[in-house]
Amino acid sequence: MRKLLISVLVGLVGAGAGTPTAAQSAEPDIDVVASWNGLALDAVRAARATDADAARLYALVNVAMFDAVNGIGGRREPALIGGHGPRHANRQAAAAAAAHAVLTRTDPARTAAYDGELAADLGSLRHGVNDGAAWGRHVGEAVVAARADDGSTPVESQAAGSGAGVFRAAWSGVQYRNVRPFAVANPGRYVPGPPPALDSATYASAFAEVAVVGDGRIPAPESLATYQFWSLPAGTSQPPGEWLRIASTVAAERDLGLADEVRLGALISMALADTTVATVGTKYTYRHWRPTTAIHESATAPDPAWVSRAGSVGSSPEYVSGHSSYSGAGATVLAGFFHTDRIAFSHATDSAPGGAARSYPGFSAAAAEAGRSRVLGGLHFDFSNRAGLEIGRAVAREVLATSLRAR
Image: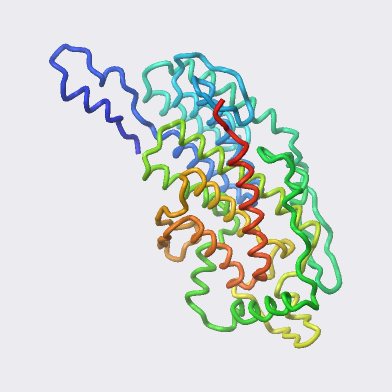
């Protein structure tokens, strides 16, 4: 939606014929942050990107928009690229050009669409457009260049494992355990201790729970719907994208100004990207087996016919749940940014059954449901859900405490 600023209406009401009005000088609000994040979400969907690749792309786009806007009279520390743009440059033009520079370089196949959006955005603005676009392009290009050697490529894999408690399949994307973080000092400090021992009471309790609530042979329509709502497989915006979408919804409802909107986008996307590093590091370190394998090969009561409610084993090691860690990070940034967790909202994920939205009393409630959905789907033990949520929360707390501070 391209809405006019209130000042435009004020100028129209009081102006006489032939008198310069606020309408002639005020800029339209082109919803630049929401529209360019929407294009990033579409890029992830079209590419069928992994959750890790999606989180990185969202961070690139939002860091570029923040640094471009903040560089024009902003008073906060940069996320990645410092310096000052032209004093009277158009900040919306800068944000659009920065996002465009990132997306055309990371998704060249869709350059024509990005060029068209940028042309439309710049054509809607009036003042300082060329200066803003030039500055934004510089920032966006600098962000891509600065992250070119961050370790996200080439793709690496961990070989299939064997034995009790070990994930059996090979899985790719493990290079993300060593990716240079956007905001936190050391993602490795958030890798938790090992999962419960196979002969422990904690493991036995979690095993018994998922064997029942995650059993796809037992009809449970509500559990299935909750799992599907948060499943977000390839071809969707992925879990990081849903938290970016929630942030966009709440920002619009709160009518945030551009400076706050780009700051929220940068904070949440950096936290989500850095959560990837700790999550992949944890999975790589412990290589824990999924409930399907554990139940099929149980030493006491094997059930080779058991099938998860999700209908699959899972494509990466079980400990921890990535959906949970992303949700913990997203909810914590939102609660910290708005200084309260108790902001009610409604949301329909890309995988919501029938496209139906669900309503939540606050961010942590949505995160709890997202994490729990992985147990209901039979893909994770609950200790992996809880550990994942805590990884995300801890990463987000550091990002909030140390990033984009006022100068």
